[in-house]
Image (cartoon, rainbow, N blue to C red; front, side, top):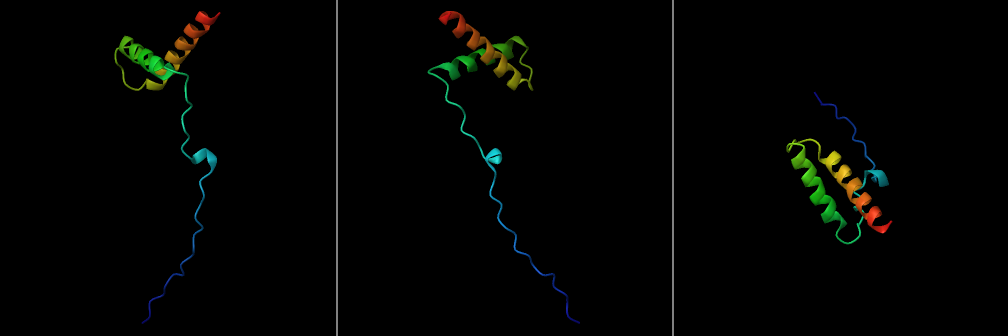
Length: 74
């Protein structure tokens, strides 16, 4: 008795959309990444070194650093 073969279909390769591709991070002006990183670490320590809030710490640090820069320029 012959076995029945399922026909194979060619699958088109899918080209990833721009949203799905890895993006190059924005380049920050000299030393800003380091300043924000240090501040985020300080905030993490102040909050008791709790895991799970890295993004919040980074965004808060970014806001603080941007305010500091704005105040010195103002």
